[in-house]
Length: 140
Image 1 (cartoon, rainbow, N blue to C red):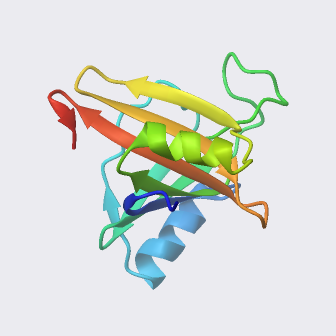
Image 2 (image 1 turned 180 degrees about the vertical axis):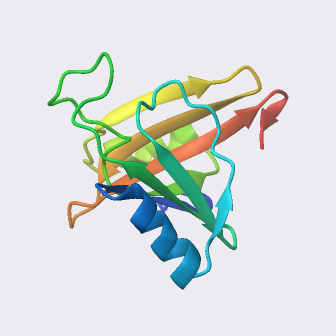
């Protein structure tokens, strides 16, 4: 059974050259800067860009994240692609049933909404994020 997706949402690229990377995508490829939400779990400078409905998240590489061991899986510094799913629990259960290791799973709450998210690797080793955005009153 295929996991039901709402859409392809973003790609994250960690970089040693934040300004040059941002300028490349804005000036050469025409992506549009967008506001970056406040994220208490991110300790690095970052920019978010957009083209159509897809976002590009660019983050300055940092050696460690606050309050995390250096060898811990770090979603902020891990290149990945992200998809929004229709039902997070069904998606997680499907991955586990199919034998995929969940690298990390975490809810994020900001007082307005909750994002349930997890990360796993595809057969090529690329990290994939799946998430469901839940607003007051149910899924978005």
